[in-house]
Length: 357
Image (cartoon, rainbow, N blue to C red; front, side, top):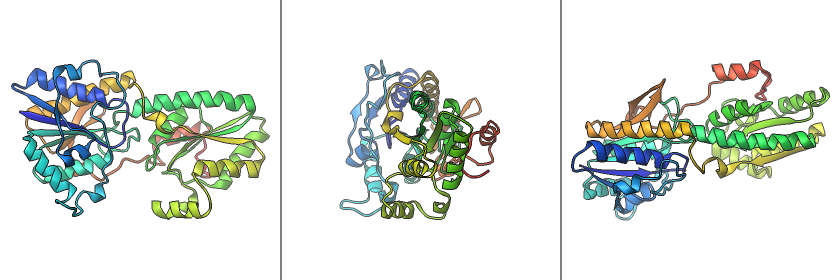
């Protein structure tokens, strides 16, 4: 049997650990197995590129960050658009057949899974593995790469906190998460943030400034605010993403974090600074939790392939590794519920979400 592996979308810690686990399981349990790597995600499949992966390729990559296969983003909305030589989807299907693949493993996030579902509906045998530091893929409790990102962001937040205390400042730390606030929420709680701003709970400028002012009046030396990159002002919630971006550009606002820091300083008189963690959260060695999760997810995906069960993506539910149909989870997101236990807990110990609640 011939198997292909690709990594698509944004990179994160643990991709190589999954590749390793898939490869080792197949080499150990499938006779006459052939494994090929497809470079640059769906880009490589569109171009019809692949190269053989041998046992030595899977050695010493468990703790290696990034992806040995490289990755790229291919917008889902362009997959079925007619181009010269056919759509990107039709090219991928043709190259899947030309490569003689019996199964394709797609390691990626929400967009990757939507494209994987398209490939499956076109007759390709596909198995997905859920990857994203945003932890927003529907149907799984956790995605690989998320816990490492929480660890990295928490350490960075801790370091910035020491500066905030030394200079008696308000410090805003921008954390990745455009649609979902899982990374900001868990990092904020773990690092002792006083306020957490996430996309699912639009915030009020007045509420934020009143919270900061109250801490100043109480003699607190600093205020730490965790801000998701996709955090929304209350009046922005009714607009779509492109509309919000247009309005912010027209108002001369680069990011919500920078704008908020300026407003806090002007309104409260406190010295407010901001720091954007950015790609720091994606890179580096996966933590032990992710290494174990990646190994289990990759091995289970390979087991499903050996059993001939395709059109699915693996998942972690409870403490069990299982799977979901691609058609049932593609295009769906897992968001933080404002009424969830973890949000209620955060509020119960005095953490504000900037919403006057």
